[in-house]
Image (cartoon, rainbow, N blue to C red; front, side, top):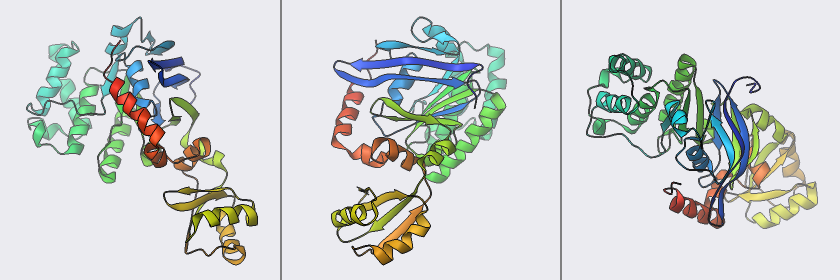
Length: 332
């Protein structure tokens, strides 16, 4: 999507520091009006911290950002009136009904009383929950609760809807169902959607994604463009000696490989034509092989040197995530 026209979000060198720890390291980007824009990266990459700054929940250390035309520092109330936010952690009142949760939200946002029920009916119908409007939320499934939270975020007709890990903890089928609803909502409401995720399949629903790692944006473009930029297929082999295989790949084929999730992985142009050479010319026995087209995980690996899963398991990244959780409640 072309973002040179109307911009829903403008971010310029936004930085958040907690003591000596930089959670977000001077990111800059723009989001076009009506775009579905995603932040993809491992837990602890700085995605939620960025959203918290854009939603005025956390004050930036430096830099500047505007949401719906309003500065996130000097015009916080205006920003809040123009955004909806679905948090990573559930925030519904489980003892209230679906409709009561929406009425409470509408009251907090000053929605005219005469408009509350028609709007509640509209958004509940959008997410397929109108028939369950009088159901107590604690009886709902995880997917139903997530859909209700999205409906609640739309109650006051925001211009930008923020979704922080909107389908975390849900099974793949439910995730796909919710994203079908989200896309339909975006087209019907004509709003901008800004979401974070560490699920590869979820990022594919976005018009553009920014890949974030260790507080920085390392790549930003449409998913297909990013994948095409990798330029190689991913080949994964199983051997009895991974280190020997990596050394042999470099010596025999000039290929740089690494161990990913216990297997030797490398990129080559034309993976399917490379495999026969592997079996006929390779000096290390291969017990299994697979070839796949470039994925967003390959994009992430090409820019960071690791997969998202490996990044989440890395001890240094784990320390960063711990620090971010400790600081996440700090409000300045």
